[in-house]
Length: 235
Ligand code: UDP
Image 1: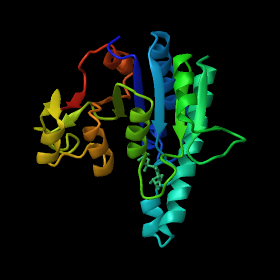
Image 2: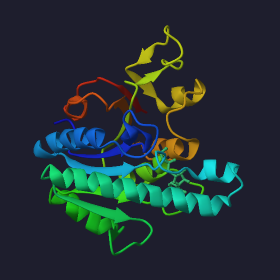
Image 3: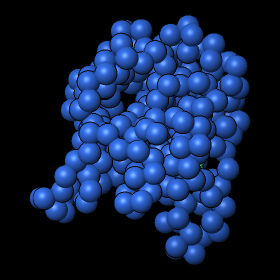
């Protein structure tokens, strides 16, 4: 394996599968199998999951809700997704722990870096819920932050597209995919991979990001084996 410890970022929307809202159990089970494959290969796995399939703070605020209140709702949505993923992984006989930045001790451990690292060393998949625990942030920022904290070698951003293109590949047939691109070039070309806060944190800490298509079974294993099927952003 190319990587020993990774942080996998899954968006909430990815869990919807073919639905318009909520969680598709089939998609969840597929993800669990993919994660199991790399766990069985000895890769230590931390996961940050989004909440956009249930609630987004910005959407709530645009409907007149207090932004901070709306963001807390978004953070709770990530915990719901975390519980769903934990359940799917346990169905696949993968040992897991869910840790949350906002304490909800009846259902998850509080986030404690040292404990998280210990779980990873023991081969447990650690899911981080409730983002950073702060309003006005995103789960992409949480992903970068946790990856740095637990010394992950790379962030794997699983999406429905197979990498970074010079223009939106879902709208332009002529879009060209990058196999590799530098942080500076992403900024120069104005490409959107993560929000600026998350992206800058990754760049400053020299944490590479790999964007790849998570919706094709087996791809996660290819990426951690070192196969370049997506786009790697590095210095
Ligand atoms: N959120 C937040 N602070 C965080 C992470 C998330 O306030 O550190 C809230 C925010 O309202 C966001 C929602 O949780 O809209 C869901 O997260 P995100 O939109 O990042 O999920 P994704 O797009 O990955 O599904």
